[in-house]
Image (cartoon, rainbow, N blue to C red):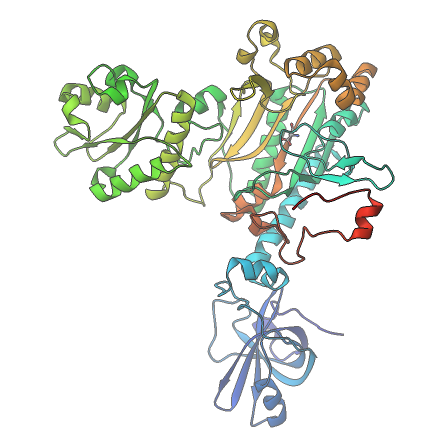
Length: 583
Ligand code: ASP
């Protein structure tokens, strides 16, 4: 038997017991005639003691142990004279009588500790060692627990998990597909699913009624902190439901997870229309942990001779509570921040509310105190507050810039506390998004999303104004989930494809199978998908979803541990009828 207990298990109650433990050497300390070894496994750390006076040769062996050696020890549990309240086993130690080295280890390239000295690249290259660190392992344990509770909740609500294929045909989620050549069908390719969207809809046609799947999805996009080329969705679909049914059931699931995993009782999630989210936060995933809503100032600040504002299509301000203490240097830094190419504002105007209530702004020469006071009251600003204003000739773009500034101020003022959760539903998304570049509409969600019944007539006259039966769940500025009620009528689906620029032939070639299925009695249905990685990172307070994925890719989409992607040898290429054409 390798062990009688784990390294996180023994307590004062076990004193006097003969035990066997196995694990890795965390560190060794020699103090006089005694040698102490911290033995670690997934469950914790137990202190081992070797006494030179009692067993010199064993102690000698212990002194030669290297970090990460794998040991088996036998000994007696004894009470520690100097206890360590920081570890669960800190009251006891093992007086070792026998030791077996199960395996030696090279010196690891970084220390296996929470505050490691290993940089990102090296940790990713040796991810299997990185995963020995408590903090990383804890994220995966949390992930397991969340997935487990999700399955439990959905099972209790009548959902069944069905696996859908990974080698499929392109799915229209809007990103680029990863493709796989087919050896048996020369010149043809499978696509990896961006989501199981069409399959889950087909399962509704099949009568499955409530489906879910914790499933890998693949999107060939440029990577950011909250994106990976392969990621995991909690994908769900239900029949005979309206938006309200789905919102209730999945709000319930989120509340259940917060309660069971974090012990937090959440209030009902407020709902915000997409229109309001854009107007007040410049984002369809507003971080509502703090207020600082946009106030439109066109009416007050236009027409006073300040040409930047006079010529703008949009002037919006935010009020940062208590930030009038910002120095010139800090304000210059904020101006530089909004002018960064990724944000793209031309400049920033600021105004402080002084102790006597007067407003002092960076554009004082254009505005009388009366106008500035009108702005102050529109902004609900008080003594000690700082007003920051952006303007521009593109309303949506300027709102996006102001959104970045708001989030930055939220960070600087400590308003984005990772232990505080603010959840909401964003609803009433537009059905379409107009692309200036391509001069055509794109589906904002995906082409299977149903328009609101009361807006269907607008499809012919003003498609841009049609609202969708689509909803996103947003927590702390992160879109954790989203979905829609689907079109289940083949006529309407045809019309949708037409509006999206599909010829009947192209629609048939790409989605004929779904259109056909709809002819055989498709029930009204709808669903949503959560991003499991994002959800876990939110619960764990992580900055990147990478930290809750066992073997993630880096920003260039590479797995540096296994060194993928990699080239194929000539035989493989030949078998697949592929020729590589790069210089
Ligand atoms: N398939 C959608 C997505 O991946 C989710 C849904 O509409 O259910 O975003």
